[in-house]
Amino acid sequence: MLKSLVQKRYLQLVKIVQQDLDYTGVKLMIDLHTHSTASDGTDSPEELVKKAHKEGISALALTDHDTLAGLDEAEEAARGLLPVFIRGCEVSTKTPSGSMHILGLWLPRQCEEVENFLVDARERRDKRNRNMVEKFEKLGIKIVIDELYALGKGSLGRPHFAQLLLEKGYVENREQAFSEYLGENGKAYVPKNSPTPEEVIPLLTRNGATVIWAHPLLKDRSTEWVMETAQKLGPYGLAGLEAWHTAQGMDKTRTLMNVASQTGMALAGGSDYHGLAKPGFRLGHAGAHILPDYIYDNLKNYRLQKGLAI
Ligand code: AMP
Ligand code: FE
Ligand code: FE
Ligand code: ZN
Image 1 (tube, rainbow, N blue to C red):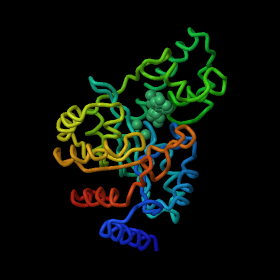
Image 2 (cartoon, protein in one colour):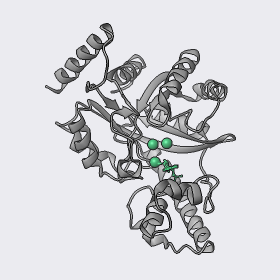
Image 3 (cartoon, rainbow, N blue to C red):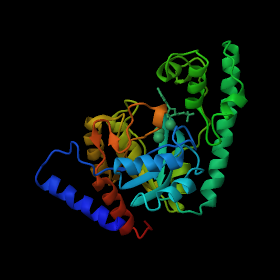
Image 4 (cartoon, rainbow, N blue to C red):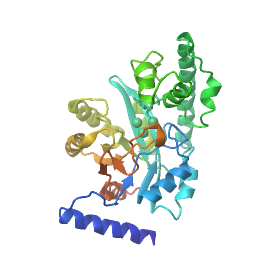
């Protein structure tokens, strides 16, 4: 039954594309980049899956920061509700030009090597969180590390500090928390001691994941830099670029499509939904546009051609 739902959606999509109809109001959505309470989202993995079902999403990936802790719950909830659920994660890395987020999609159920690596990543987060608490103390802002850890069991970081600053009345909204304290130029900012993409990409790839560069043009990076970096990281296993993303806009989607065709990269897309932590980021959407099924279909075919499990 679920398979025929996907087929029906696909045929609908073909009709829309052939007849050049407007997508507006049509639900043919997928979402390959979302967060839950296992990291900095505000919906539990089960709630997230239920919302995705309500929205009519046919393929969903859960990609929490530096953790796989939400995947079993989401996968269980997705049984019977979503035609396709993809186990994923988003890993923070650093390059000489700043941070770079890497998505691993289609992680297998057993991937001890990735799990162990992420334990280290969360330890590095913990050290950084404690350094940030010290910085806040010097600024006269009272935050106790236990208050931070009371906000979740998973992978905690700056968005959780933003929530505390908001609850304690130090800021009026999350944006202000980032611009004044938590952003790269903020008063309490501490950089994370992240691994390099050259370490993370092969690790995820050899464990069976399809590795995507998340939101490559998010921070007004130049197209040339994205092109050069994609070329450099292709041999390490980088498979694709996230061309659709809520904060990137359709101009950047087109730019990234060009970069992908010139570098032989696949294309991916996701909302980067975080629930209330990122208001305006809607499941199955990149801004005003839906994330159409063909993004999933193309990536699925990419994996099938490589003989990888889907
Ligand atoms: P961390 O991994 O602890 O460095 O936190 C990074 C996360 O903070 C990102 O994944 C976003 O979810 C969130 N974030 C970064 N910048 C902002 C911002 N300006 N407003 C709201 N959330 C942000
Ligand atoms: Fe986040
Ligand atoms: Fe990200
Ligand atoms: Zn994300």
